[in-house]
Length: 337
Image (spheres, rainbow, N blue to C red):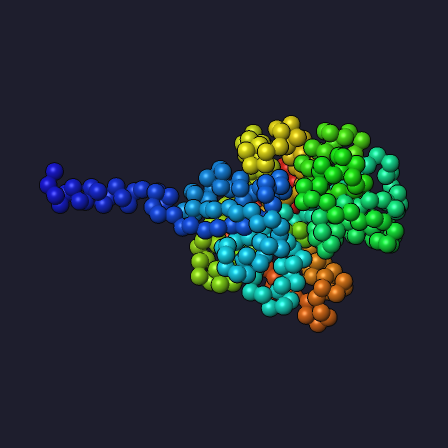
């Protein structure tokens, strides 16, 4: 084969290679917790199942401690995408932050107040030791929400500051309550079987939006193809949570460190509760409710409540659903928007 023909053969072979064989675009996605909670797993599942790689992305996933830190890292351009908490993201938009929610595959507020056996009703919380990590933190805010539902003045309970890992304190009897994710609850109950959930936040606050997949307007403008790839792969991974249990459980074991039985039971409960949205999750009702709630409680000034279009960019999720088809179940069907 002469040199010219050899060059043509090599060129043809290069053109035939899939996109993944070429240099992949490196991006970083921030998530709230380490190890990750089951509810935050879709982005990790997308990486583990090769969905990002198939789309030409080399994804680094970093755990930043909590959702507010993820949001701040996004604003500082330290990460490209982030799982940002619904309320702070909306509050930030009211202050002019140039961040857009791209999807909300975890729209339901997955957390529960887990309590000791002698607490039978919300009224029994009066006088009890309420476990929190810090004043104004995640557990403090949610515990106060439960107390409001119970019509109990916070002055009538004892807030106890515990370590960031709150399962041991509850199991050891140092506190009477703890705000836990489902796998933490399941693990705690494996140690003390009569612990139980007195309040599920997704039932107590059914319209509050929990978590967005977000990016800055700068990233959206500069890298629309990358944004589209991330949104599509993440929605596809969320669908895998409902349809590929045999592949999901090993990923949970690898990433969280919990025993397989704990994870399997917790995962099955979350599926039963339809905790994820396998379409966009960008419900106008949920976004608008959360914005109005933040205004009502004073976190957003009157007259500065952002509109739905201020908060979200639906264009990428719409293209993803057009490509993947609308998810209609059989497990946990939801409206596309």
